[in-house]
Image 1 (cartoon, rainbow, N blue to C red):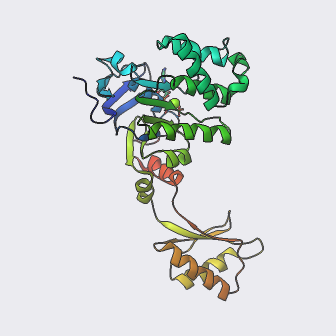
Image 2 (cartoon, rainbow, N blue to C red):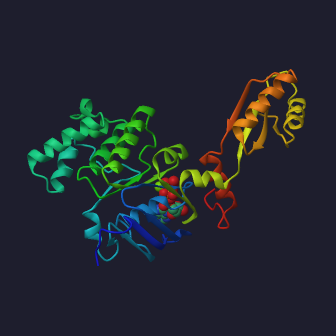
Length: 323
Ligand SMILES: Nc1ncnc2c1ncn2[C@@H]1O[C@H](COP(=O)(O)OP(=O)(O)OP(=O)(O)O)[C@@H](O)[C@H]1O
Ligand SMILES: [Mg+2]
């Protein structure tokens, strides 16, 4: 049965073991709502690329099931392939051909007519700022240019579901922004995007939901905000200037706020976990002032995804096999 209703990606208990190694996937579950950007986040070797390759029908799972755009990846791979785009972790473009020739060739492989292929290639070259290099052979491209070209290829057909395996690794900030914009535009027009990344900031900005993967399974799933609230609280941090005693400052702050202050001598920071961050920040500023303490910086810090990531991959029962 094929249906376009329901989740765009649904994977249940996917397992995969490459010959002679530990399981790459060990019961991975994933559900991605249509038209959303979903992040797969995890350390090196967590199984992200393996999951993407299975969902994109390039690899068969040993067990478990998955449907993409309503089609089963094992029993109806052609149906899946017709509806997806994939930009892999390693670019798959032809080195000898130019960027434009690559795009036109892939467009023809997707059954576009010659004029339509030319038009689409020109559009995508412009979108990813590759016009200047369009007619140079790809072997002369920089890493970032290759990535952008690979991404352009994956967008030739306006896929229903797009898999992006580390789309911005190695890109400079401007190119990264271009990719982010493209992903947002795609999502706005209804494309579902599954994105793997090492960059928590990227997941935080782009993804409606994130699955945190470690050792071949999902150890946490949710919105970036929900994941962040799982580990810990906000805190106020005071950075103490050189030549001032961090411990004395910490004691004063702890007394003033009636709280426990943590000291990190290496960074010269005093941190106090807080509930009502803004109010505490104001109280703290007054207290510091009254006590005549010198500070380099006073800031309110919310937990970021980096902390979530470290916290959860360290405490997961399956353990960080890959580190
Ligand atoms: N072709 C292969 N043959 C044998 N083992 C493999 C193969 N590809 C991946 N693996 C192993 O499977 C596990 C998962 O690898 P995978 O590439 O899916 O991880 P990843 O999360 O994409 O990592 P990275 O962040 O480094 O890209 C790793 O232990 C890896 O060594
Ligand atoms: Mg990978």
